[in-house]
Length: 150
Image 1 (cartoon, rainbow, N blue to C red):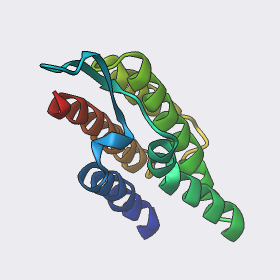
Image 2: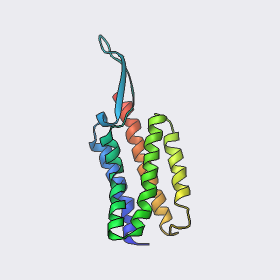
Image 3: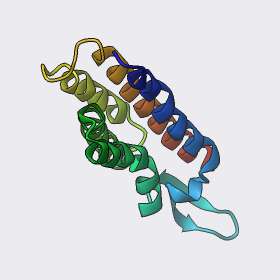
Image 4: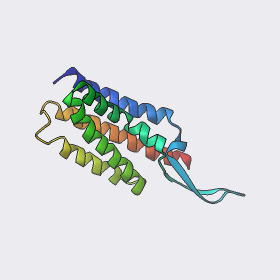
């Protein structure tokens, strides 16, 4: 196992955590209002902007591009499934707003994807842990953003 594999456990979740702290909810929370005066009656839901989706998938795109450029197959092997998992999570968060399905389905898919024989046995736990942490942070960001808006 290379030291680079251990950095995944820090870099990717750190990026998502920074997004959770620094990105304002306006990028991913939408409101449907029945009335605004005299008292607002609104329902808040997950409504991702293109900026939000791009910022969420940016580290995975960068890892794929860097892996292709430097010919590090390890980065590409990690980046492609992780990118797919994050996109699946965003789509499920959009479809099933506030449901645990948004976390459980991508988490199950990550365990299955990273159990494929092409991935080295020593790196599997690190990659699974990284994807689960990223999924948890992403779901927490969306769920807390919609609940705080209320």
